[in-house]
Every structure is written in structure tokens, then in C-alpha cells.
Length: 291
Image (cartoon, rainbow, N blue to C red; front, side, top):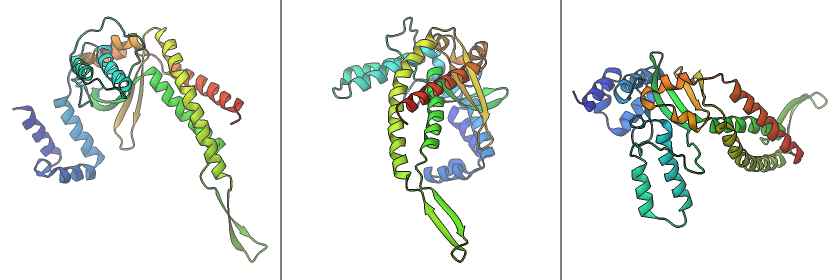
């Protein structure tokens, strides 16, 4: 039985009639299905679509299968080179080089040297795989991207607390005036919105400087991976897979993903430590600048 026939059998088993619907009807059917049905369907399909020991797959339609590459570094470097070229040649396109890099991006091979300026592109890259007998919705992160995302969340929360820019409404009973209900509005919300915008603009500058510093710091350290597991709002298992540095990426082979990843796994305390350290540093800088 070919791949398409197996896929049809799975879909019809969990969602009867699904494969006979129009594209619009099928989308509606999927949207209205229970989270449990969607998860069970995706789990069965993953055994068909995934590769390697963990039935791993990654959602990158324009790229070759991640499991065809010898390690994660070899998978990411050509994509980084392609993206870097596209950004740098935005005003002066070079179609021949663009096409050459697009082709090279999809040819699995070893990269013995890391290009100057290379920065891992893994930033919430969606994957699916089997872990502990169940399918997991996962995301790949470099440690620098993961740490920066958590710093940004925490700093944005701090800014919002300092400058709440939503219109603040206060409702109270005025007993001196026939028990009338009085409503007042905070007049500072426009100022707070402007301050929030200025603070976040300043943060973008700080994050840019921190990103390079953080990557250099992490690349001087020994390889390590970090696993953050949680359950999403639909009750499905999710996990963030975080890679400390470039050397770590070179030690994880996609076809034996969990085996290599778990061998390098360390406590998440270091991630938390770095997030807290830089959140404190950035908020202190913002206070010094008058925010």
C-alpha cells in the first residue's frame, strides 16, 4: 500500500468522510473536531510521516527532510547562508546566487567549518516526534533565541506594569449625591502608551547588542541541551528542545534525535539564571534612562 493510501485510511478511521470533502469543507471539519480527535489523528499520521527512531518531522515545506542530514548544524548552516544572502541582496538581487544557495540548502552534506558570523536560526521551529510512547508537539530553539524570547517576555511585562496604557476606568458609588454611580477615567493612558513605545524601542537596541554577546558566551561553554515539557490548552503534550551552542548542534543527529539530545541534557537552571540576570540588567538600564 502506498503512502497516500495509508494516509487516507488513517484519516477515514479517525474522521469518517474527511477525504471526500472539498478543501474548504475539510478545513471546517478539522477545525470543529475535538482536540482529542485531532491529536489521535496526528499521532497516527506521524508514524507514517516521521523518520528515524523517534518518527521525527519538521514543518519546512521549502527545505529537504531534516532527517536526511547528518546533524542539526549541517541542516542549519546552508539555510542561514541562504537567508543571509537574501537579506543582504534585498536592494540588489542576484538570482543566480540565490538559486545556487537554495539548491545547496537542500543537499545533505557535512560542514567541517562554521562560517564567520554564523548564528543558529532555530527559533520556535515546529517539529513532531514520539517521546515516551506518545507524540509530542515540539519546538527547536538555540539557547540564545530561547533566552532572548524569555527576557523579552519578562521585560515587556515589567514595562506594562510601569506604564499601563489601556484606559483605566474606576466605578464607584457617590453617597453624597443620591447614591449615583460615578465613572472616572485615567487620563494618563496616552502618556503611558508613548512611554511603552519608547521603552520597547530602546529594548530592541539592547536586545541586538545582547544577542551577539550571549552567543559568544554560550559558544565558549561545553555542549548541552535543555528540555522544557508542558501541556498545551488542548491537553496535548508539548516540549521545547533547546541547544546551548554550535557544538551541541553538531552532536545531534536527526534520525536518532532523542538519543543524542538526552545524552547532553542538563538542568534548566542555567537558562533560568541567564534569563533572570539579563532581565535585571535590562530593567536597570531602562530605569537609568528614566523609564
